[in-house]
Image (tube, rainbow, N blue to C red):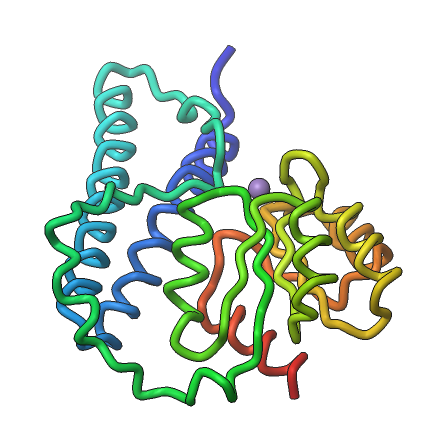
Length: 223
Ligand code: MN
């Protein structure tokens, strides 16, 4: 059966979305930091994701050359971006960085529930200068950390082990009717958005995370 060209383009777009988003997000972070250790780390991430984009395109073009165009194999996790392991000896400059931003005690505290390490790294890189961050690795931890620390706002992944974002939000709503909870989700369908908005969340931002949209949404809800 001949592949439907629209399906191929859609699959390719899905495959490229996360690495391209990582390249643009970390390029922006690279321009905004003076910390040499952070600059190196962000540049490594940009490099890895550029390589990933290149290899996805090379595979496609090679198959096309063989008259054998196929949609890329479904990616196991579209949320994942390539983040190289950090090398310990490159950490020596981290202590020199002083944030130009608000005093720590004046910053709002955000609880970020996210089970994927590279997603959390992107979120924390975007937000760590302006907010105090708490990280929960699953929904159950999110509920516990909410009741202990009472953060000002919650960013909630939907797909997480032990307890998903829907159930965690239901539990948190019993502790607070007012704390803003933002779903951060790869879901794209209107039905998913409807379910999110009916499940106690205040709003959602979609993955891959757009830095401007995420920050605007946080500022809107904290205003
Ligand atoms: Mn997840």
